[in-house]
Length: 307
Image (cartoon, rainbow, N blue to C red; front, side):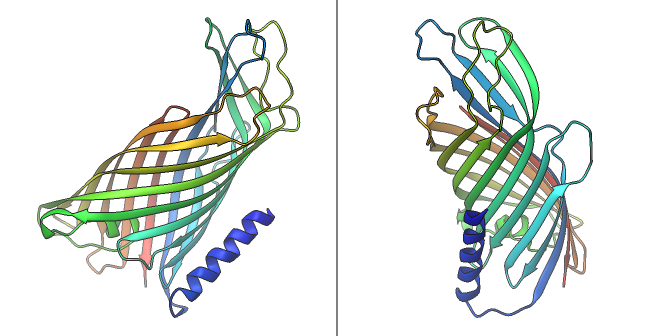
């Protein structure tokens, strides 16, 4: 928690002093979202005859409701559970986004998840087992950059519209093609007072007790971004990105395989509507990213009011 507080303080200080600060509320946003990020851990005992077991950790019913305020180009928001269920992942998220750069935004994200579904699979033979671990907690600190790098034929990209909350009127069909890039640094901690791993039914011997696992990762992606303007103030985008990264487990003696290099690809799309007076914007967006050890699906529906 101290690390999170320090990062938030540093981010706020940078945001305020990067340019003259004016306390002017630009917009209020309400977002219903469902992020779903799965992590794969691979365990193999030092004994050469032991099977290799993969554990897929993923959230369950992870819907959340968030409220965000944009003060002079600096967006701050908080999200938490929206539907209470007996068996679910409890989530909360603090987000800060700096939007003063041209065609770019830098975002800091602090997220906690409590309770994860764990699926174990025998990679050496057949066999699978599943449980829901109420006590597993995932804590993520993330710094993310999103940049519109180039737009062809001097056309207008909808990057600012969809990612910087800029209203956009449209009364005819038009399109543009851009190149966008993203980068991210993540620090993820998995904790469980009992054990992150459980002993599946297909194993004869119990697995060791692993209460905490830390990992650091860096990723970069690039790809085309297609903007489409439609009549009646509707706009649409679709994008495809490919990238590479590196994931490193900081605890090397736990018997968990180092993730190492990561290749991934991502597909995203979204549609929007802007009111004729540019006071209201409705956004519907979704992404799916697949990698060797991490898979992410994310969707959100946002209502933004401008002042």
